[in-house]
Image (cartoon, rainbow, N blue to C red; front, top):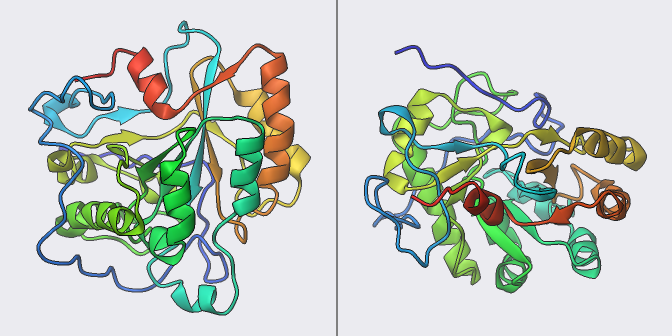
Length: 286
């Protein structure tokens, strides 16, 4: 089987100076391995559980990109809370990988959102992770522990070996629980947006649904909030999933862009939802 690599249009760029990329070896997961959020994908999810997609061809981890276009004018804003496994010294030196003003803006604007969080981010900012996880307006999903790539040649990110991918995902869920996030969703976003059939196969046993997007905000390392807002507003369609970032040093204008995006989309008749609602609207429960 020839595995095709899919990747984001513009999320993580190569270069040691960029905050979304790291160079350390992939950390080893603790033993015993932490539990995944759901059972193997061949087993039906409990009716009360979050909506998920059925396994893809050959039983591979399913991939969700957007909701139904005819399902009403809904849109999901998603925010990647990135921190790679080796960025602790930079955080200790004062670099901020969180963005409390963005979270407060979403609360003030009453906007539901899905935050794709790395385990390392949750370890660095446990109070923020717990606050987000306990707020019914938000849902926390998995963005790996290490923020290392799940394919080769992914914007210069170090690569997680295929036999360590499941452990990397499960280690993130452990970090969430230790931070006080009790109900992280069974959704996973690949670092850099890069995946192939090998990665989808490696994650099958975790029971996650991989969540991509159809609208790239362009907020990573952007300095023009108006340009970010225009890109989102030009790209949104009914059922869209918008990818943005919750990392102050790597996406400094996201909060300002959101304050433009939200009222404009509402004026166009859009309703903001979490990813789980979009998946459920598409009859995604397996």
